[in-house]
Image 1: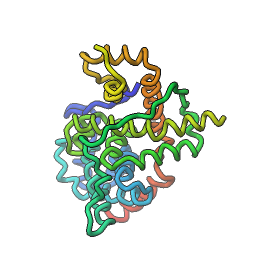
Image 2: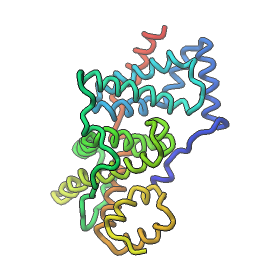
Image 3: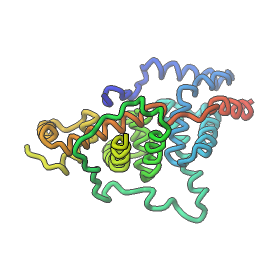
Image 4: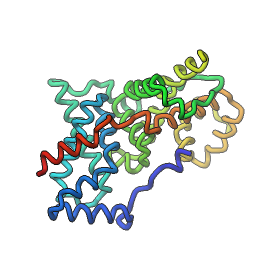
Length: 212
Length: 77
């Protein structure tokens, strides 16, 4: 199912890309109000990008606003080398990383936040069977909290890939472009992130379903 | 090709994405058909990813769009 939900990278002839290019020209020419229409589809993407770095809703919202503002100011320099959404997400990602560094003065981001692909040997939680949890169960805050806490526990570079690929459903090429890494690195980080999520979440969900 | 559990775990993510190398795919599927532990790892991982992709798991804060617009209107006018 997941592979069918992936969006492909848009080329220059993509109708959405053409529509956005036209909007950008008009905004740069003075139709400022159009900027709100341009960014509306990407509000969640920008927020989640900031959240993947900062793990705080309040900080992520502030940085999402900063990212959008920075994009507006730099719009005349957007050349269409990538999709507008990719460009916008990259700006926000950089803003979020700068905020993270500023919040920890005198030190770089701790090493455990950036696990190297060659490190560690990730094993999943070994189960004998799995009882499907339906999406209706997400009405329970308890379940949403388990999932959010597990994502928060991931090292930052794994969390960013997981959010781009599995929450925002960007494809591998777009994710690689946003993060400035190869597609192979994206795939490796995604494997680790998914197995870590399974290891953290599956035993908790299994224990909950046994209680009922 | 006979694969052990560890090898299959390394392919779980690509398998979910339909991106396993064709030379390995039959071995992965053969293993999953006979190993209940790896089948449960696959099912649970896929289920968790389905749940985190749901908009309810990572929803935008209430009023996000309105506050964003207010901030931008304030700055760009």
